Length: 61
Figure (cartoon, helix red, strand yellow):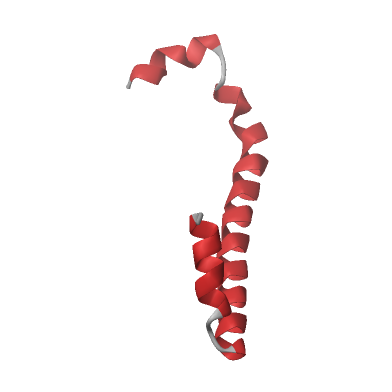
């Protein structure tokens, strides 16, 4: 049994109220991860200026 299947089995044994709480908590946590990835993606363009040969000297610092 995979870890996901194991977790789902345990969740299915919870009361409906506890299942709902797990669902909303998982959703919130996953949304935080998505938000962080979104901010990283947005910052890519701002950091492009430092991706050049002249600044490679600073990569070893």
